[in-house]
Length: 178
Image (cartoon, rainbow, N blue to C red; front, side, top):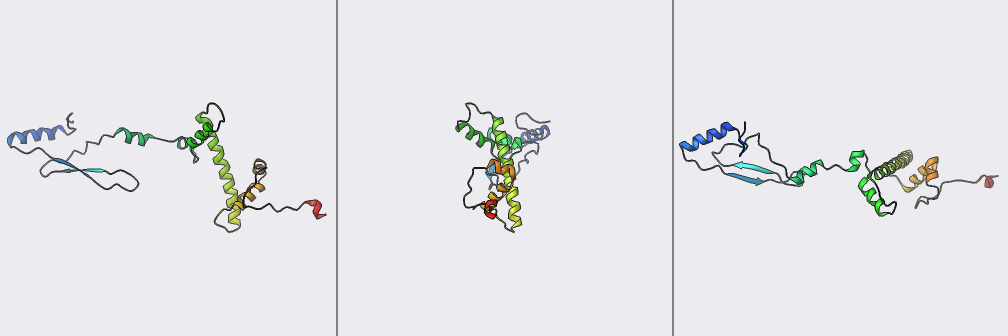
């Protein structure tokens, strides 16, 4: 059972009233001390320091959250909800500003982000396989171009694209050979 005004157990309030009636004690003083912020948290935590002779604060009392703290805790991005790594909000902003349509829904941005993420994963996987085959630790533009040109579907999609600093696919026409 708790006291409505202070959030302390009723037994502790009753014992304090009895002791204050029998002897004149100064009211308890509470000081707040700011501590250094923990790594990655960004804001300092407050610790309560009780004066000598005052009872310890009840473990049942809790600090009330402000509106900004509760909003930060519940804020989830569209990309997290969809399980994507690509930023859905940024893609939606570019779809809106790019004169794609008069109205752009969130679903179209999620779908576009999912397609871009899938294509990026495919290209990166193929280029990474080429890099490991060449015993390299870094993917170069040449390996990206070779990976795209060696895959039939990606080659059709990137048909008219010129890749910078990647050279050309080695190919000799049959007419020249004969």
